[in-house]
Image (cartoon, rainbow, N blue to C red; front, top):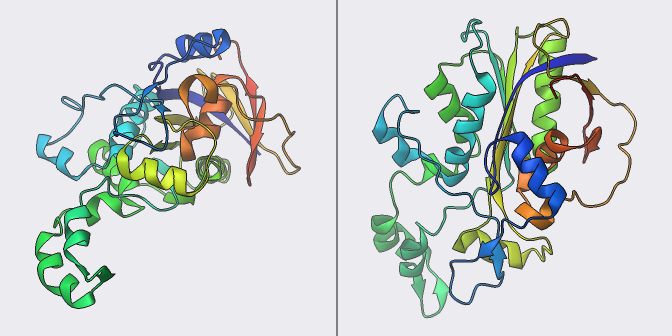
Length: 288
């Protein structure tokens, strides 16, 4: 089972150009910076500057509904789609997201108001807690919202799916897109993942889970088409057996751990095959 990769996009602490990011990783040139949170349990993070969404949105006010991960996903999705001229009514869309989208601290005031004598009170939640809860917050934290935002902004209405979890989520989304194109469910598929673990609520969760890698953020996207599509940068294949063990991806020491986008970045930068659950192999072409 094989498809062509005809477009790629990425957004990382080292920038958006694959060659530049790969070179910085190869040189071990750190893009890490100090965590913003005073007394943070994690001293350094891999932070992305921006991104600026002005000019990318159909309506500027839509940005109010974007989580940090959604903001990191849209630019690489646009870059990967490029000048594709097919019917977006039929274009597939598959997205990897984190297992439990955090709210970035927007609900902290509401939760604090629900504490009575040091214990959580459902009565307070129904009263003053509800009054303080941001009404638009669920539109940022629902797992399927990253996919929805991309679909709305780019007018994509074909086969779609969201995979939630750790690093395997991005690979699972890639496999779904690969299979959808290979089996003719859609003429092409836009596939990607994005994540962020560099802000207060995320850092607390990172420490609670005992993660040892440096937390980072970023997004990665691929445009997949049938194997005979012109302009292929590479081909992807579904691997039935286990992926080879190769240790932690080298980019983590330079950019941080990109969560559910981490293995997709590894695949885009330098891997021949990757797996953490579903497995895929990249077969490079000259332009890759």
